[in-house]
Image (cartoon, rainbow, N blue to C red):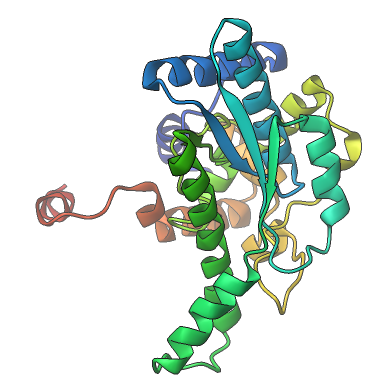
Length: 281
């Protein structure tokens, strides 16, 4: 039996959208980006484009927002960044995404030299290697290197970095802390995965990218491993949970295990007083 009280608390915490309407949500999120650009007096948006549905939809929203700012007399521009580690196995999907987004500018940066340099330096300094988790840990270095690149461009050009965090990934913590989880604003927040796909369809994203199997593609020994395999639960079950539906007990158990295990990713850095307060509650 689903713990409905906890389920509702999680739904509220993650701002899951109720009564979803694709056209309304597209406009709401473009307007959010436009308003934030105006408020911060920044000059545009930066987002890494992987070829998945999240970055494709997020990128299109960014481009629409920047175009609207310009139409109203502003100067905002959208910079899409391709950040492969060497050669990306599904590069054709990334190029399809760019064609759909039509960004103002595209920067392509191979992160492999910087990631390998950092990794080799750590090994030379004495970091032990050979453990089965090494490839996973290096995958997180890749995610953080990508965010370094995006923040470098944003800093140099007085822009903001956009993240693609959405509700399905947030509840299970399926992102790298201070990697793809780091951003100045997250226009997809509150959307289950299926709603991101519906937003993509509304915006005109090709079915191939809308229905593409989600993969973080961070581990060399597991190229393009599907997110759902790594998580042990389907996005459909996660989405059902976030929409307040009853789900299989084993799926709820898996979701909640990830939710509790990754709580630190959804919180600010821990402080002494904050920790003491949490232990008293």
